[in-house]
Length: 294
Image (cartoon, rainbow, N blue to C red):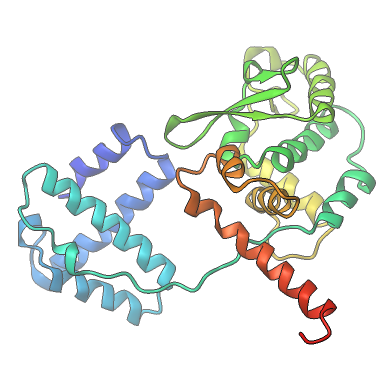
C-alpha cells in the first residue's frame, strides 16, 4: 500500500497507540481501495481534491456519521502533510477539503449520588479480588485515568508515602497524579493480599488476575460494567464513563480547568473543555427550576 511508510512513521516516530495506528491503516486502505476501483490509480501524486471529495461524499451517502467522516479527514490530512514533508507532493489536495459539522455529544457520566452509593453501599465482597475490584473503581474515579493506563500500572509507579501515582499515557507521556489517603490505604491493603497470590511475584504490575497474571482490559471492563449496573441505569457503563465522571465532578466542585487537563493527560485545553458543557447544562436546570421568570 502507498501508505506503508506513513504507517511506520506514526507507529515508530509519532508513537501513536496500536489502536490509533490500526484505525489509520484501515482508513487509508479503504481510501486507496476506492481510488483503485473508481479512478484506476493508487499513486499518491495522481490524487486531487475532487477524488477525495468523491470518496467523502460516498461515505456521507452511506449515512456514515459526521464524527467518523471528520476522523477520516484528519487521517488524510496527516497523510498528505507527511507526503509534502517527504517531497513526494508539492501541493496538498486537502487544502480544499472542509470537515462536516458533527453534533456535539456531551460526555456521559454517573451522578455524584450514584457514585456515593457505589462506594458506601455496594458490597464488593471479601478477599483479594474484592479489594482489587474496589481499588479499580477508586483509581478510575479518583484519578480519571484511561483503561489502557490502569492495566499497565506497576507497583513501582506508586508512591504511598508521597501519595502519588505515575501514569504512562498516550505517546509515552508520563504524568504524576495525586492520590487520597483512603486510596493509598486501600492500595496498601490490596498489595498485602496480592503478595499471597501464586505467581503474582513474577511481575510488577499492580492489578493481577486470580492466577497472578497481569490483568487485561476486557476483565476490567466487565468489573466496571457489573458494579455500575448496581447503581445506575445509564446505557454506557464503561471505564471511560468513570473518566468522564471524574472530570465532570471535579469541575462541578470548582476545580481549575487547567488542573483537570493535566491530571487527565490531555494535549490541549479544548479536549478538556467538553466537560464545561455538562456543567452549563446543570446550571440551566437549576436556573429553570429556581428562577421565577425562567
